[in-house]
Length: 415
Image (cartoon, rainbow, N blue to C red; front, side, top):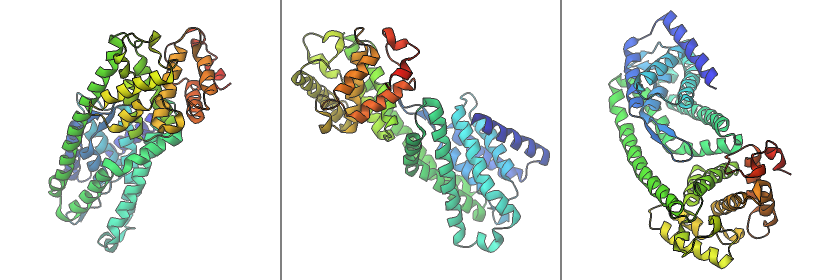
């Protein structure tokens, strides 16, 4: 994907340098808008991977790719110039803070896709002046917007699969679920900008970008709240380790592997966040115990003792300001899996696996066998098999004891 984007960018730069920049004032205005949006981008996302939000730059990219007229005069830039301007503006706005290669590749390829779909039709006159001023023209742009959004989701899913090693289907579903959010606002702003500049000229750029700037400010404030919550969750997760109730890194291992299993099962991004935060705090109820559980493993405890620890942990979690779904997952850890939501089933199964695999007398293979033998009451078979597939692919590794680090583990896990 990076090579494809790099080839497209290089070809666009060479073509633009050879032919010259058409309508340099327009190119400069859109380049400044994209660079401004890139300079104002923010990093967001928790354990599920870092995302960078730059809605103004993304909207400007789409608007330039779909630009057919400027103040009633035909636009003369082509698809190659769109890619060149978008690349140059993105890099200019990212001075000192280089963008992630995945996101840069997506932006270049999305800009090229939208421009290739629109600019040749506009340049050849296939759209015609009557169609360009008819009520069907905005519908045509919305159709191109939908195709571009679908292209972006496909590219993002491919990159996510390459990055995490998970299946492609759940990654694509997760990206498609995210489209109605900020993505729809970005796309709508890009189409509105293209239509407004066609009538009012470049003065429409700052006017119609104001709503997106307000949206970006709101997103930044929301991310600040989420960052504070993540810090609270991380501190609580460390509390049991510092007090000696759980082994070092146990909560983080369960959270990392839990996200991988949830992704394998096709959970949404919101549910993956619930899994991660609940996994980080699932042992917080152990702080009520007078004596720590041996090795911090709660799975071998009697059911009533595990239920008491889970209820106490849920009561603590409800005071942290996290969504109630997170507290519910913590509270239901000792229940039969048929009485649990899927997020709670994942946390319980992955937690039990880490407890069993951490025992030198057990190891990861026997841990999976114990989980499979408990699928009648404690662990859902679908979750156990998803865990086995994640481990078989060499997914997030935890502590290794004996055979856990053997090269043949991935092949034997399915056995």
